[in-house]
Image (cartoon, rainbow over all chains, first blue to last red; front, side):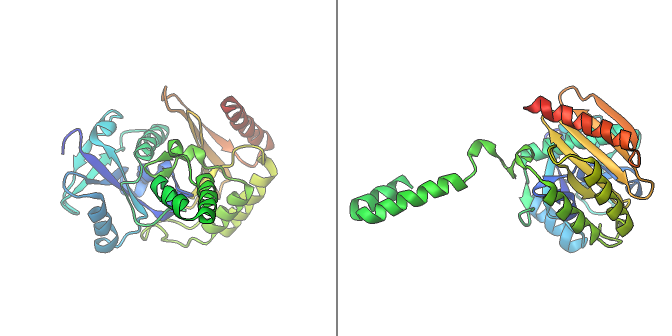
Length: 126
Length: 170
């Protein structure tokens, strides 16, 4: 993983309305201990990552969006390899920030990812 | 496309007219390339109306506990009913309508993309409050406050703020 590495984020179907993704897709929940799970794009491509997430882990995803490591570190969100759940697993640690700062960072990452577009879509989001 | 039309033009005069007519219709249906992102339409190009908001709230009403991979509290029926009623009573149909998403905690998150501003209101359906967050994307300056959604004056302030931002886009 380096500064150009694309970090892949799975997007839940309920987090898309008429093709628009909510900033929540880039915001961890308290149950996640404020750590946002991503895939290391140097180790796995968007489509296999989606297959792993939906078929191996059995979770729901309508598609994959991405932000680079640089885009995260610019927001003081270092990408940390966390290979315990699976080898390509990476987390962004939001735990030291208050709620409004977390929301700001999530919105900025969402806009970066949205500008880049879907890296993989399992179905056209409506 | 041009070569195809040329071939049709040379071989069948009447068919050529039909082909040109069809091309014209297609041109009106196809979204201009400068409005497309890699993902399709840009978020700022999507305009919702009140019917979209009502339909979306109905969709969200049908979520069940565990909707997000085993996590995710379903918004309560009473909460969705209350929000639908208070939203329609206070929010103007002339303003940009919000995109609406469920939250893992059983609430709603309303979002607007207005020019350089990203706005959100995280609604607590139990306590009838909302966490407002307004972000200017270029300066990264944000503004937050908790709104009592049971108070008319607080709705008015919210609606006025969104209205002002929408006016700046015109």
